[in-house]
Length: 149
Image 1 (cartoon, one colour):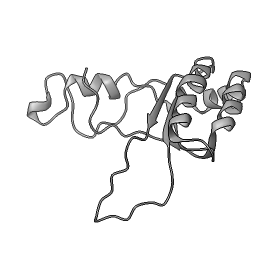
Image 2 (cartoon, rainbow, N blue to C red):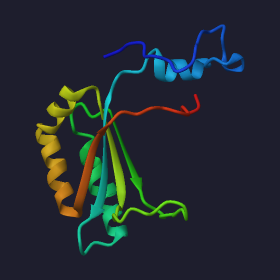
Image 3 (cartoon, rainbow, N blue to C red):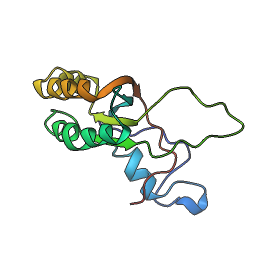
Image 4 (spheres, helix red, strand yellow):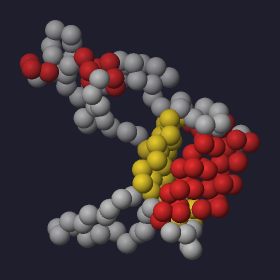
């Protein structure tokens, strides 16, 4: 689904960033041409008995290559936990997480079609070998600072 999205501040090519509007980089990256994709975000915890390093190694070397075969999967990002900073003014959640996975699909139908595929079933079966707990969300991104061009 392609289309123009509501913009938080006025934009035109004659009304760039310096005059209070948005520049071309924001417009063309996220407003005029962006598809309304669906994204899943999963928090992953390793299986008991695996070290964090073993979990990451399997995730990268075995699991990630399987994702390439999943039909309709447009983007896949793994984020590996390297440190867990805390803040003195906010309590820390008591949940162990070894990483997060972000997967993008064109829409809900594409996600459901992908999940029903034999390729996704292989991916899920492999995940059960090294993932002990998972919490998955379907999310809507709100880009605040877009990537550089």
